[in-house]
Image: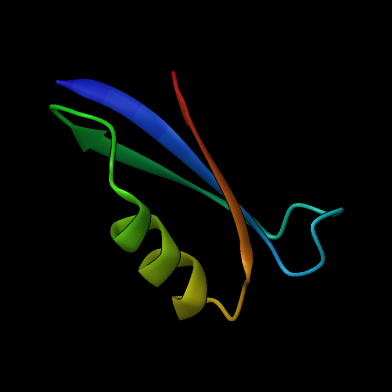
Length: 49
């Protein structure tokens, strides 16, 4: 199982929150988008740890 970090932001400049996700493959756009929206953030970036 791989670990990914989802970095979310409200203004695309400052980091609002970072979420660690454990999954067999990289999380898809929909999952990342929904997690970001949960915190009222429109910007996100996913990277493998």
